[in-house]
Amino acid sequence: MAPAVTSAPALHSSLTDALTGSQNGSDPCPASHPFAFKCAGCDEETTVERSDARGLAPNPDSMSAVEIVLDERGWLQDEIDGRLLCPGCTDVAT
Image 1 (cartoon, rainbow, N blue to C red):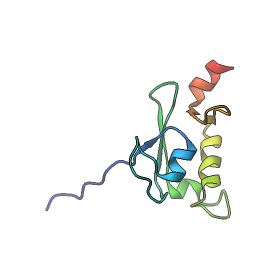
Image 2 (cartoon, rainbow, N blue to C red):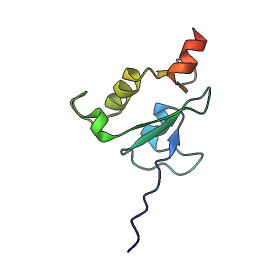
Image 3 (tube, helix red, strand yellow):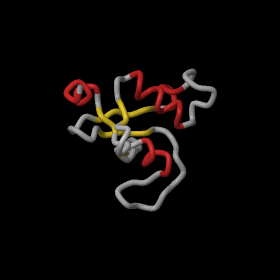
Image 4 (tube, one colour):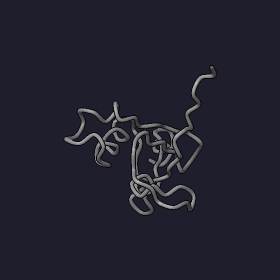
């Protein structure tokens, strides 16, 4: 019997996209873990699992918990357009 194949989570470029379930113009769907994010400045990716968010906020399924995980990893959200930047790109921006 072949092992089960799981699909990779959709890549999001902002927390708003992740919250609404927006994926390259597709219909919104309920937000759920894992959340995969791609840096707006390069091809760096990071994934936030529910286990990463557990213990950081009262509700690990909340977007604030996901935001805390990203912040702890050094990812920042652009205040103007909401795009996410990885630690490497935020170092360049400063």
